[in-house]
View 1 (cartoon, one colour):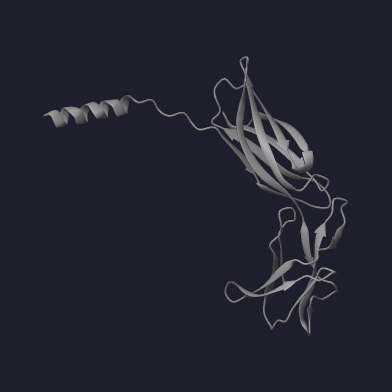
View 2 (view 1 turned 180 degrees about the vertical axis):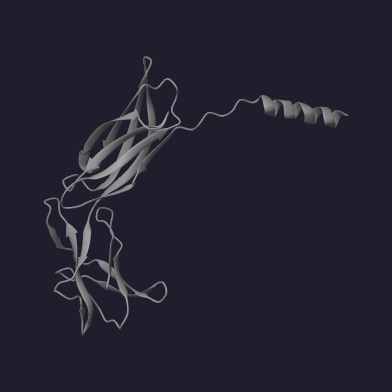
Length: 208
């Protein structure tokens, strides 16, 4: 009887325990923002699970070398979901960015959730001539985007070759020369050249 009574008491305690509040969260989508030579690329900040007293949310974005953006978050399409968009282009500093939220409302201010994302400049795998498939094999040029909007050869970078065999299968690796050129010996078939990217330059894929 003592065992039954103890178990019943434990069940009552569990039922009486209040539900845990939703955890405050900040998501950045996409977390990898790739900018091109023209136009802007956008990322969305989305905060959820915030305290009921919050009336305003300020978001400070800190980039490399002191770069700074500011944006307000607002409830728009979904109740209790705060959102804001930030645009980046080729003149923005590439690399790791931090997001810090400040929560404001009812005479109080508090630090909100934090998150990180990256801004990368586009790279391109292009052919040096009208045809990239030649008698000697498959060749092309890897280029990277500069802040002035120009693409320049990207030297000393690893470029990998894949062949279609029902799936993409790794075949070989080449390193670009002083003019950004790569070259592979190939047989008949479908091939894909891939560049993995860096912390500030995006990845690139080209299928031949």
